[in-house]
Length: 250
Image (cartoon, rainbow, N blue to C red):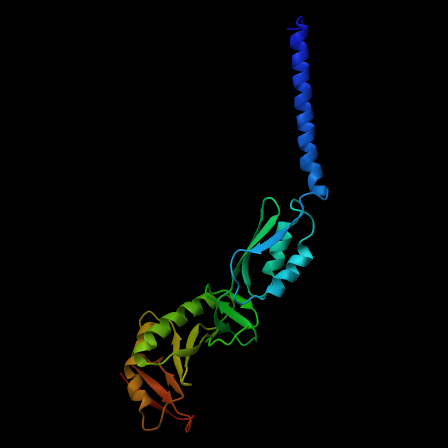
């Protein structure tokens, strides 16, 4: 081959063209994003929002949407969106040739949490802080740190079990000693105590449901507190004689 000038010339030309193509590709990849090429023309939300105001999204986008299609910091934009109170998760991606698309998953409030104003629990049992943007009838839950998901789950179970009695729980609390207290919409408190193998919470609550008609029609009026922690009965406390109690047997 070394004695064939034509072949050598062809090989030389081919190598020259290949090298030029590599250099041109590198220049485009490295240089184009740094020039004023490929400007962004559109930012679009892929789903409608209920709790988040459009102005909040626009402010985050204006602060972090700097550069062109290639240089925009997608991660910074996503992190900025997820700092908004009602944003549970945000996804951001480029769509060629000049569009940025944003998908936002909002928190869905399931209950108020604790005594702190503004703390809520979403449907996943996650605690987040956000102001309610519209009137919602939400129960109030409370418990030790990290217990929100368990308290929310129990609330759903208790609400379903109370349906035959025609009452709904308005609040549910779990103490530091893992004792449960249920507050009904009519103001009555039900002390359920701790979970026990011999007397599960479900059985104690079912006993309350079974006796609820008699409790509501008591001669002394409706009790303010019903203590279901007894193995085979319950104790009642009335507003007029809070220092005295009446016991009932199963």
